[in-house]
Length: 190
Length: 205
Image: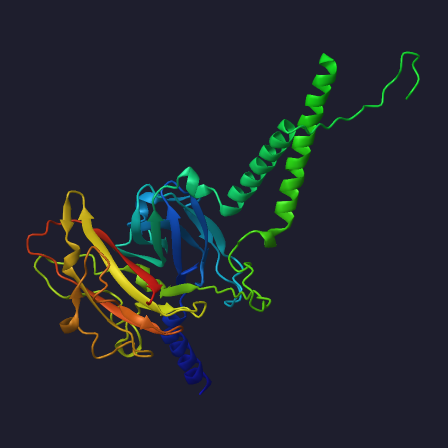
């Protein structure tokens, strides 16, 4: 009876064993990036990649779609360890910087993908990944006048007005003088 | 006399700069005098506007079964054979597939899961990826669904197939199962062919 029970347990374990094999996972935050910018601007966005699977994974970042020509990565790959507690907040995630530098006007869409795999020499290997959607609205390059704010114009105008006022008053006869304390010929303070 | 005039001009210059600096300071520290939006004097009763803020974070994460990363169709297929099963199509209990992808619980958004592939290559020879077909079942707890048969399979493409995803609006924590088959064209040259596919989870929107 004991042998039968033991055999049953072994068979049960063997059957279940494939179901408990490790899983491979990848995650990313945020899931969507929307940027409004202009030609020539440089925008840096940080993405976090993490591993919800059971084994470490080499994750690489790629840009796809219309945003690809404008996108670069400071670090494009990282080895990410699995999340120990499988709950928020993310503990072993890697923060990677994405730089967008558009060179022409328009609305561009694409994805930033974080992927891992495939296994070496696999007959039909799987690369797995997640992607963040990116929408980039690029306006024309900024002119110098566009960079000046209303406040700056008012302050500059006030400075000019004060200067003009002073010059006008001076022409009208206003004289201001300051006498500096100094030594007389006998070297005494006055 | 000349020195006196020089002294006066010097003093005047100092006074000008002093007045300019005072003007700057006054204007900088009295923003209510500037016609900024919301601060204009209208004659109506004014009320204090408070700022409200909220931070939103979005996460998308998927996990794949280990067999899903190393799919094999066998090592000695004959040219001209069709609908050959991937090795783990029916390897599970009661013929379940071992190939699956799950929208992980670390996600806080639903996911669309799509797939693309690349041709099998053996030296100068290739088997087009369109010879691989697949089908999926995104119903939870149904890893051997009746729709996961070769008859409902679609060919794999070299771009993500958004029209036929593995799963659409897949809820957090749910799993999609899939199977693969391969056709080997009759003209295929002998060799060991290696190919790959890519699956991607993206926010369902």
